[in-house]
Image (cartoon, rainbow, N blue to C red; front, side, top):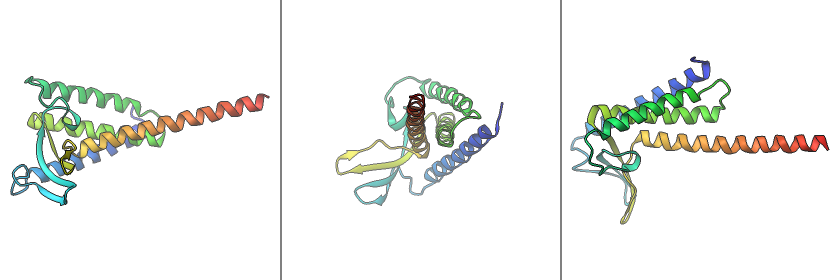
Length: 173
């Protein structure tokens, strides 16, 4: 059940969870608290600002008023994590393995927050003048980069299959 690639993928994911939890704990221990006194990292572009997100990635559904929502979302993350683990098959490409590992680590990191706080700890804030991107965290970043890797892998695999079909057709003629 746990082939070598799956073991590597899970190990990568656990390292990412540790990074996510560590960065969130550092933010939570900041003095003065970052929700009261944000830290400007790059003027007019990037701040560290503490926020608790009760919604999903990038604050979607944050205003949804259901008491059980954090636990429902944690359950969804748990189910997604199981799916990501099973996607790590023996024949998986390195790019896809890294993509699923990133998504698994991010899902688990945010799931831990939902159980600990009933919300996800966000602290990365990108903005320019009046435009503000929703606050996010390392787990959100891992998930987003993981999705990009999976999409890139799908494009590469599609192009390889198309090339093989073309070569096969050319060899038959």
